Image (cartoon, rainbow, N blue to C red; front, side, top):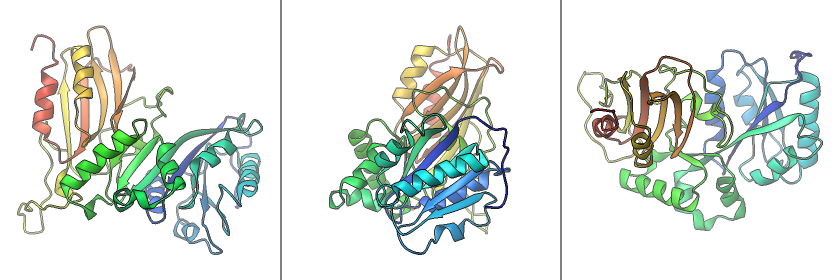
Length: 341
């Protein structure tokens, strides 16, 4: 480490824990997160490799943030003391705004969370979120894995069902339903190469005040251009021809991004019912929504929704992201909530 962060910073350091079984895609997700930030001078990355040689640290060396490695053990067992000491040293020396921890594939997030929440750590550090990357193949073979694998999912605030290109659409749809049935609390998002928009990661944990203050429709990483209202964007090949339908769930054509904009008032009860009826495949919705007595900001991720105050224009302006979703049908249902429609 070769630079000091602001010595005047005394706020609580936020910790985001990236969890997931071996080979699930945690480093891919971490690199993607780091690529979003223009200024990483107040972010430290802590990587735990179970082995004598740290590979992930080398992959992240050009990220622009400080990268610290803990090797030769797992931070939830043999390296617990090292983890506590390292976090304390990072806090005292750098006063970072955020620490991203990439745990080893065999780490139990419950143990790490308990350490961060110990009385001598809690005044200085806050576990902002546990994000677990789940390899779709691992879910299919979940009965072959043990307690650690289950805890990585059970204690997660957000689960990315990754590598969906390995299965067909019906199988992924079944996996999503099974995960939601077995684990009703976490938000679940199907991903290919952990492609998500930044707000999916940075949004507050359920029950906390949302940090989202604005709508930015340009930060969607799943697709390139936005489509017109209710119509999915389609990728063309080099010859300018539309790509045909394929059975695999991870094809780019199966991801859709669409939007809805209307200055009229929506019935709040109807809108909440609309959210409850959305299919699991529509995993992201955000923006402002105008009700009779207020305009709110809606942040919907993986089946969970939060409505917070909105100080912007009194209008409904929403963007949707989904996988294999009929955008036109979703917009049609939403329009039924317009007052006087």
